[in-house]
Figure 1 (tube, rainbow, N blue to C red):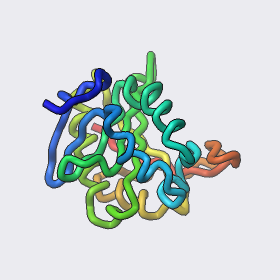
Figure 2: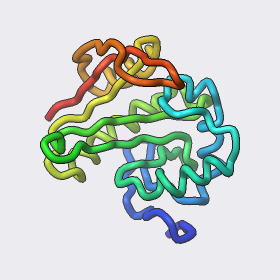
Figure 3: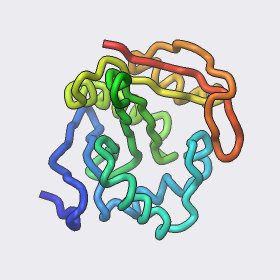
Figure 4: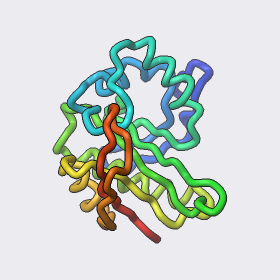
Length: 179
């Protein structure tokens, strides 16, 4: 069993193909910083690019580790990205929103698509009452839209002026996977 420095439960893992999904722990800080500090990777994310490991450590401890479904995408045991699901509550508990990012040097190698497919399998199995997983994509993020389509998502529509991204209100494309 891997050391987790008292935070994060690494027992929740799933492997498909070359990708393994597992919970984050404090020992992942340096690997997480590799892509969370890369402006090219975070360009389409709603959160700002991390400029210091201390701020990222705080985010890891306060947000990532306690999150019920925020997983490291691992290749050969090394975290190379993340994927998360946020399930709705109450009358919206039948759906969850998915978000993901992967280190630039692993782009266009199929890792993200494998991680999304694995997330679908795990999410529908682990999250009670889940019938739908959604993903929002900025229209110019063609690579992310392609990942979702390869994983079986359907483009449902265009949402004008839908979300704040780095201080600007942006349009989004809505993709979904429904069981």
